[in-house]
Length: 94
Image (tube, rainbow, N blue to C red; front, side, top):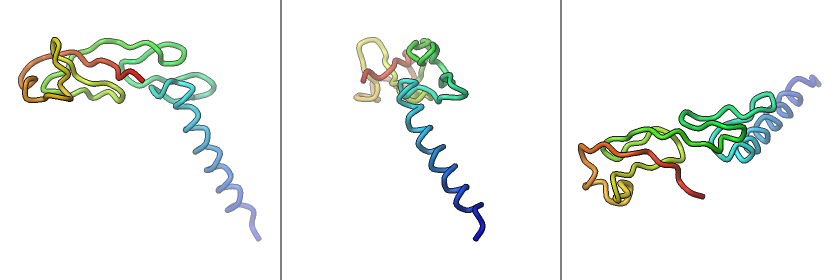
């Protein structure tokens, strides 16, 4: 029997486990690559702990782990008040 399928399964299992742990090590805002966090867009820092502010419109933030806020309005809770308005994408607080 060939060892190739077994090695393939082991490698996939290790990669899956590493990716899940990497999210936690990078505060769920990036992936661990060669021992360092590669942060999602708009996050920085050794563990992706810093957030870089950017704007949103119509309750849309493209960055995972963020939500749109216009003034005192959380657009995710009341998107009708945020139509055609520019707000700020802010990080979700764990």
